[in-house]
Length: 510
Image (tube, rainbow, N blue to C red; front, side, top):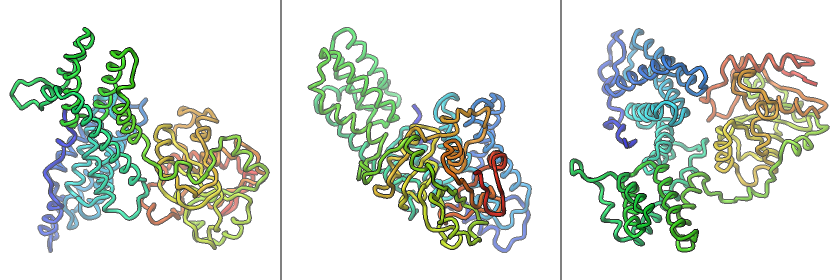
């Protein structure tokens, strides 16, 4: 199997950008900016992948449709840079370079989101190539290191992923994405896996005869061949000969850094074989099972300092309805028009104040209270701000659950909404992708849910100009892209159809 690290290019340390600046100093040349060989090759691969997606037709696959759009945008940005004056830029330096750099990162992230299935794993390899190219050009890119770490983790190379996550954390003061707890879980999982393999080697000394890494050209068998032979011997009842081969294959997989998922599956099969051979008795495998369970648990759910979350209660849609019943509610948008205003006292006068994701408090303009914080699970902003209720949205149940464990701050909320409130428009409303093709934003999910529950005498929206005036957010969130124009248009149309009154800054739905 190809290892993820083989895609790592020769380290440049930013040499391309620096040499380009020296070459253009004092020059007024209008030639296209220079492109390194690594970047040129990456752009070529991206163009080929875009063509493959177009030929295959990805209309029914939302993630690959998004990737195709990101790749087309990348090609357009590159073409624009090649046909416009260099303006003293080179590689991924300067304004045009920044646009290309951002387009590369967006394409890499979209490729990563496609996962490792349905297209031969090509998207994962593409994400690895893009992340390596980004870091070859800009070795201090936080976004580049985070993309690299996430892609390596998805590829099963956790040791390299841990190193990349460490580089990311060393470059940032604000862990908006909850990398630190994720890194802690991976470190524990790596240690538990090493302990598990040492235990196997200690309990089966003969395994070393079958665990030697095959030398190139020696004709030595692959770990999978040894494993298959062990399984055949086990099925024949020759457990004494099967055991060293099975363990030897596991040790080889660990030493050769096979993808984590592959090793986990093999260990699980090994445990099943051992338990079956013992007539269902797992007592002698207690220590091994403990290591196996612990490394899997920490990969799935990083450790929590306070598993009770400071005594917070989980509430479903029914309990949420009871909390807001009979109360006047205002939803406060993160818009620049609101940030320039003076509606703070009016906002604070409502019974329940709802804010979203990366909201920013400027008392005269926005008010001071936040009773309910609604956020998408992948956004790491304001989770430490004390609120009564934390409402977290997410389309993927698995990722939603992981984010809750990683991001919730003990004592920062009294209530946390549960699975029943995870994706209101889709799950409670039953509105599928055909009826509403856009990804519902946190603001729209919240608004739709409160309108659906219909228990508030006043339901008012402050500053909902759908980003026409710009954004008013925490500084660290200013680079997070706003929703697309299509999504904003759909949400605005829905709101205006139900509006009872509208003025410059307030829309009333009741």
